[in-house]
Image 1: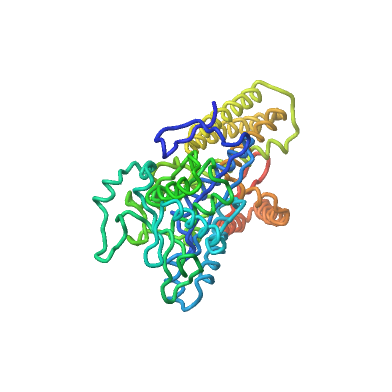
Image 2: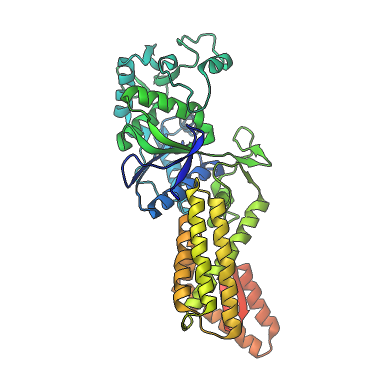
Length: 477
């Protein structure tokens, strides 16, 4: 089975055929850095991180570009409120974005273009649209003629007539059509501005992504992504601008959009006051729990946010951690030869991997893919328990290949990486050995109160002790 993705433009799943053999070119709309990133910001970036991981697993040479809209009304308003510069605000919250996404295991894009660093490309594209008759100058601003572009509305499925009927027009609006949108805004007092053929000003919202994506990925490329709220007008306008300016069709081959995050099934938004900052969530939950929570639902489906669901995600993740730990125990035991149980484990691992790949090939279905990791985890735990109870030697080859398969699947989803770092901390391991030895001494002396107190203090600190037939084991909650 080959990779198929749901293309918003066509409304159906299509087989992925890259523009250039062996390469995948991606542009993802980034944040407007005027505040800390919230959970709604996190979903598309975690989602595209998995898409990129999977494309790389399939062997594609991926080029991933993600912008920062660092020139915007919201940034200017925040700067005025703090009596500081717009660039200080944007730089501060770009750093906060990286801090949050690094914790969530989001691998950094290859290129992070900023609007402020691409004024020449933006002005050149606007100028080209004016020359071709797709745009016009009005009082120092430049507007795009939507009626000039015959395909306007093809991404969102809207007709220009319906859009015009629902448009709200200001009394003093002099645009040729109420749906015409700004490519360049004439300068206003107290706002940042740059020179242009039409006077000092700054870009409209949509032109930035057209100019920057074309610069780094060419006039046509493979994937463009973002939240569903960007389909109209942002991505619709990107198509109109880019295809009119460059003459390349299509501008983007596959448009992928993630669903909304809801709270009690109501769309999360700042205006409703029901949005949550990533940093506040991570004050109460581990970063990989939040990542797992996001990926346990198909990216196009709504994702309902709640403490209960985050706690459930944490418990589910613990089950996978237990399987990983059991694999480590098996790998640390003297290996035996092949046997029926080992053969069955290996068959289960290979079957789980095939099912995992099939799920990911079906429009990056992480929810279904994760279920196959759980199926393998169950078989790993059963096999480990049987080896311990029977005091037998594990099938070294079967366990080794199973561990590789388990790590491949977990690595594509981007989970259990925190546990790896903790498990490899030699100092922490030695400290835990000392504490476990003290508890064992207390138990040997029948000082059960002291032994229980040590266990309880470890639990409070986030560690769990497990008494097994092969000794005391520990793990991080």
